[in-house]
Length: 234
Image (cartoon, rainbow, N blue to C red; front, side, top):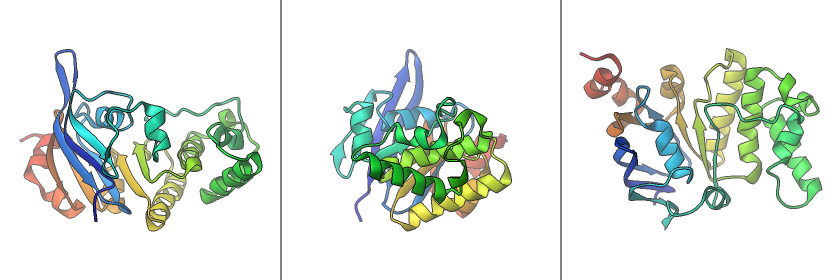
């Protein structure tokens, strides 16, 4: 099966610093992928390149065989790529439902119905009319997560979804990610919680100092000497 997303030899520099260096990834449809590495290894920079927030200096990024690295973020979004951010970006003065509706397209009634269905997807339907600023941190993360799903993207990028979320809400989120995979969606997540990565992901990429040092199933990554050295040193 051809990859949904292909990152080929991508390099991104900021001044004299090379944040990502000749990184290549392939994401097949309908799987959950992990992107891990120590702080400063280039994970979020790579997310920014994929979503058009950062322009690549070298290399190519393709979605369904068509280049997207020269497109603007909104164009990539409309091609079926959605993402969350490390820092929550909900609108505190809007309700949970309204936070989803800000990205809605098409008939209003259908958009409202989809927003309510998605809140139900993560068991927040009872908080649809609550201001997002009054929700807990974990609930806000769930709202941001399902807002990404409003446009039914094929590729979903999650930047540290487990950070700061209590175990109950985290289980809701991880269960929702698995259900998306079962519906044929492709998920790539950056995550520091290794238990989450090892339990959830089917294939893991590891970055260190902007370079890919390993990839494979979680069991192989856990035992990889390069990965152990990158995290813990000799």
